[in-house]
Amino acid sequence: MTDTHVSGLNPDDLTDRSVPMDEVARRLWWVQILMFVLFPIVYALIWQDNPLRLYNADAPTAYLPFEFPIPQLLLIGTILVGIIIHEGLHAFGFMLGGAKVRDIQFGIILEALAPYAHSRVPLRARSYAFAVLLPGLLTGLIPSLLALALGDVWLLWFGSFMFGAAVGDALILYLLTRESGNPLVLDHESQAGYYLVREGYTPAK
Ligand SMILES: [Zn+2]
Image: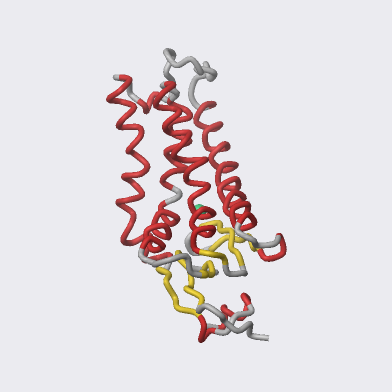
């Protein structure tokens, strides 16, 4: 529990509600694949088109009249930028919930190659849930739905990848639904989840 010193909170005031990252990968990989293929499958059904071709000339946004590999490379580049935006949106959400810039930490969990944004101060559960939800919503769900409406395959794969990348966030939202009221929670610094913070907690120093 040495890690909780970072937060300046007393470990006695914290109840761990997190799931180890490797367990998330081991148990939720099928959810992630489901999130990843859901919109491409719906696309294929709605548009009667093969989404793997990555180009739909019927889409009003058919802005990539290039051949392989340029759209693929652009897609990979955009996804990398999207991952940075994903973490930035978590940070933005933490700040809306009351965290200061200096309370936010960015990094990468090397074993899982998972980038993260972490708030070192506790937030109310609803604010925390909003911060957790924000990237999956703005970079995943909304672009995917927009892609389905427009028939834009490129946006479809971008949105689908970003939606699948939010599987850990979806797990945290699920864990949060089991809390009653609007308790204080502290984002876990290395695992998927958070600590429940005792009301009237004592700062460690
Ligand atoms: Zn996330």
